[in-house]
Image (cartoon, rainbow, N blue to C red; front, side):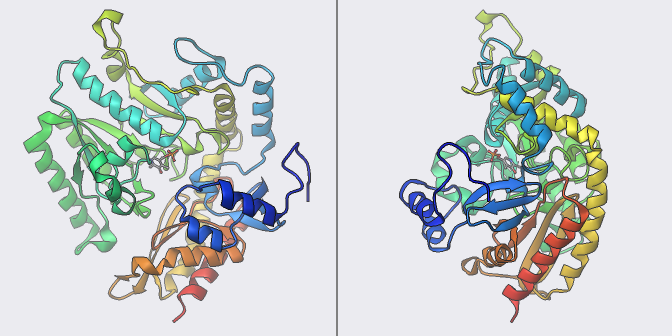
Length: 457
Ligand SMILES: *Cc1c(COP(=O)(O)O)cnc(C)c1O
């Protein structure tokens, strides 16, 4: 095992664990359980494998929480950071420019839906969402329609963990605690055919019907509708029936409501298209991206918008139409440089072709999971996979929350050499997009074994 670095080497697992216990509060983590359960401490990674400080290796089965694209420790991405580092690590984007931020903005405008013509940077998906919401809100104000100040959002949606992003979220487990802190939005049902009493088409129509009635009665006070296009990710990998997203877009246009597409999870090829909106030729007014933008290397996110929205802010200083928003590290050079190298690799490696092939390969291997008694539904779009576990296949009876069935399966998978995280009773598989086909097969086999062992009656 490698032992290098100025102060990182030489600590035993026990010493690190003790320091973790004393000093560190991990995100989205029940520390009581974490500290009792021999936590993983990662030392390095290479390709699609993570290596812990005890020298054990694991498949990175959720791409380090949906980020990684070309594998870890990739020479071209490493090099891009080193080259930029020799020039400048960071200078502010407030009132001045920098080379990688400008070039990346051009690149993003070229690869995203054509309506999107301007790029506003931030450091995380949640911030990109905050920016999208504030932008939409101020857009109507600047244009002289301050009454358009409410948002439509989806039940069970997830847009990040800051207060604005939580306000448009709809996952009670994460969000209900903070209810009093949040601004109110109008929550719409999101189609979930597996748990709808009727066909997928009927499920879609029921949701669209509700959207239309809200728009009819309250359209004049609605600034925008925010949605995760094609797939609700953290909500359980729930996929929209075909035609739903394009109908949503159509209604937004009809009632003069901005469409905000949160592509933080789905963007950059995860669903098989560069952006999930492309599945239905949808042209959002505002789009949020993050996660895979830097190949999983550094925190850069972006909110893209149309010239129409941008122009509503373009005015003399005295008109007070400026967008007063920014962060210390907005447009960070190291991050933008590695994002550019990441997008170069998409082209050079014909990554979307690989994603097509890998998705078919995944679909084949996932077939075997459907026979397991505890697998209610296997959902897949591209390389985004959710496996919904049920106590009773016939009745679709869910596992009780307290049973933490997803967590148990993922813990077992870890023993078998694969790291991933559950979404309650839904087990996810979100491998790095460049994962070689044999590794995909190995990952699915591990999940199969983990589910079989944990759910055996
Ligand atoms: C992960 C995620 C976010 C939040 O991104 P962070 O970088 O974790 O803040 C927002 N929206 C969606 C759809 C996500 O999956």
